[in-house]
Image 1 (cartoon, rainbow, N blue to C red):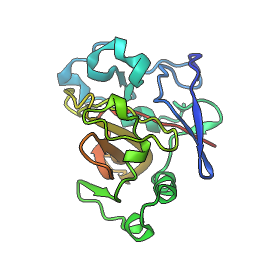
Image 2 (spheres, helix red, strand yellow):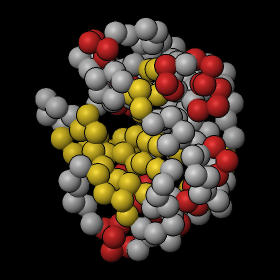
Image 3 (tube, rainbow, N blue to C red):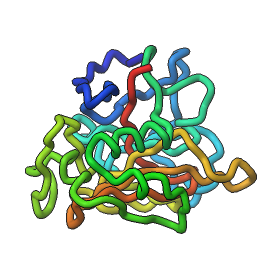
Image 4 (spheres, one colour):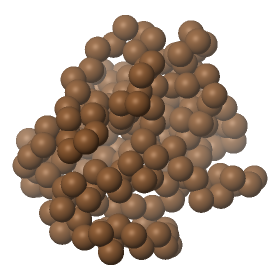
Length: 209
């Protein structure tokens, strides 16, 4: 990426994914993404890209990558390395189809908060030893890690329990943007699909152009 971080990659079906969470702190043009100690009372009011460390601990970035709000995802300066991009909802669906999820279930686009879909597709993406319960097989080398979440109100949650990944797709482009994401949970083998406020902080997995 622009900071010189190198990432493992993996081909799954017809797609090539990063096998690690993004760690970049700058956009492609070299501009820095806002970081550092952002007060909780200010985090949910941000309308620009921002990053945080999992559980607020910079030492965890090497393992888990960084957490990004969706304003960083949608910034035209591009957070992904050259030749890569943030996956769309459709590209996540293509991955789910390859993993064995039923096409009718994938085609159901209704989103009411969050819905877990499929059977054991999420288990195939997780590195078992990193998760509470250790129910991952990492069958295709995606190597998902439970970096947790920074809520839209600035609280840290679910390190070791949840992995949440942004897509570049939105359901509402008005005043209150809500973007589509995927969630893997320690106690579930399926994959969650839902919508989240743009102010939340989640992991990013890039996909090759």
